Length: 420
Image (cartoon, rainbow, N blue to C red; front, side, top):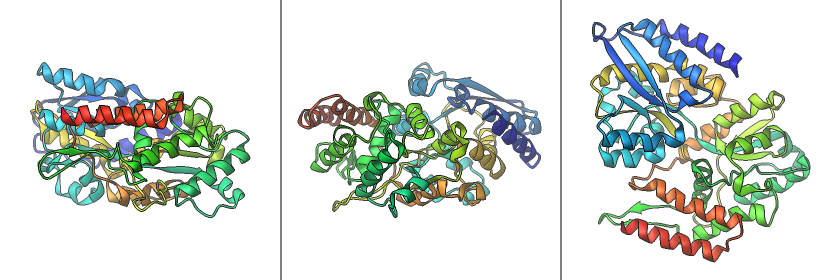
C-alpha cells in the first residue's frame, strides 16, 4: 500500500504544476476541512494532494480536522449547534438529507468551473443534488456492485451472474470450490452492512421511503416484496449455508479477508474492495470480475446501485467558497483522480478520468456498467434511521428472530418514524 501511495503522491506533485493561480492569489486564506480519510489508510494520499496544491498556492493554507467516519455526522451536528462549523466536511451520502434540512451546506453549483461541470459525470451530479441543491463538490465514487472470482465462475460452468438465481447458484458452487464459503456476506448491523443490504432489497423492487405529492411519506419496508428480499438474504446463511459462520458479526474488513484468503468468491461491495482485496492477495490480479447487483426474477426485479459519491460539502460558515472549490476541483481533476483511484479503488467522478485504462479492466467492468442503474438518494430527513430499521431486521433474523416478528418490528418502527 505504501508503495502505491508513494507513486500516487509523485503523480500528484507533477499534476500540481498545471494548477492555475486564481484571482484571489494575493489573499491569505486558511481553509479548515473536516476529513474522515485522515483517520484511514488514505490520509497520506489526501495530505499529499493538499501539500501539492499549497506549494502552487502559497497564499492558501489547508488544515485538516481528523474525525472517524462513524463519529462524523454527530460531530457536524454538534458543531452546527454551537455555530462552530469548519469550512468544509466530508459528506456521507446518508447524511445529505439531514444536512440539507439543517441548512448548513451551501449550494456548490455556482462555484464550479465550466470545465469541471462539463467533465463531471451526469449520474454523479444527479446523485449529489437534492431539491436543486448540489450538496458537495464530488471527489470520487464507490459504486456498489458484485465482485466475483472469474476463474471460479468458469470452473463452475456458470456463464454469467445476471439474476438472484444465478447469484445463489454461484454462491453454492463457490462454496464447493473453496471448501469454505461462497459469499462473503457483511451481516454486521452497521452502516456498511446496511448499505449492502439496501441494494440487495432494492433489487427486489423495494423503495425504502418516498414522498407523495401531498408531502406525506410512504415505505415499502412493510410490503411483501421487502419480506421476500429479507427472507432471501438471510436464507443464504440459514438455509444454504454459503456465508461465513457468525454472519451477524461479520464486518466489511472480515468479508474482504475471507475473499482475499480465497475462502469466498463473491462479495457485494464498493469498488474500493478491489484495491483492498488485491493489496491483501496480489496473486488474485487478473482473476476478479464484477457485475451490477443481480436483479430478482420478480415483476419488479431490477439492477440497482448506490454510487456512494464522496466529496466535501461547503458549509454555511465558509467565507472563501471560491478558493475552497478551486482546491476541491484540483483534488478531483484527471491526474489526481487517476493516481488516487489506482491506489484505492475509488473511482473518479469526471468522465475523462473514468476513460483511463486503469478503470477499464474486468474487475471494474460491473462498476462502470452499474452507474446507469443508480437510484437518486432519498430526501427523507431521517434516512439514517430508516437504514437502522432494516439493519435491525436482517441482523435479528440472522440470530434467530422469525420473519413475522422481524416484519412486525419494522412496521412499528416505520409507523413511528413516518408519523414523526
